[in-house]
Image 1 (cartoon, helix red, strand yellow):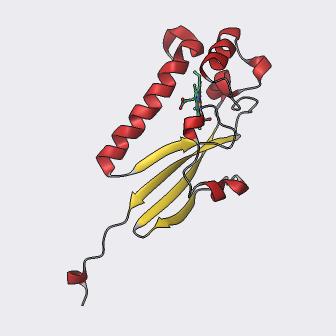
Image 2: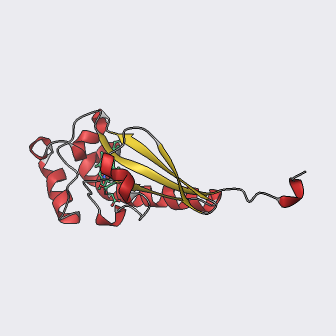
Length: 137
Ligand code: HEC
């Protein structure tokens, strides 16, 4: 967050998370994203295959077949103490953080959490290696 505090980190955080996701995806041929049940950014809504998995708000990693030759993984993200500056109870947030959040995210549902809560999930779609018929006996 640097020395400008959490309010300044809000815009950086959202831009950097997206850039990191793009870079990893490009390097490894994966599709990845972050999602949650109580969203801050509506653009983080879950892809189709993730939706039914969220019904039980899983606290353990889930692995499913997304389509032929595509594996899907859903990995819970737990909140640490440092996350509460922007995801803790609304009345515990700094005034400038609260103002920034309501300016950038008018429909923010991602406050009111405690340390250790599952805040959301990373989802990953990974192509499986095509089995090579030439390798079979
Ligand atoms: C400086 C404020 C700030 C801090 C600290 C912070 N977040 Fe966030 N968080 C945000 C913002 C802003 C977004 C929306 C980002 C976007 O536009 O994708 C967000 C989005 C998310 C999302 C994506 C789902 C959604 O609701 O859009 C998850 C998951 C998440 N944060 C988890 C965490 C965790 C875990 C930590 C601590 C390691 C943390 N955050 C710390 C501000 C913060």
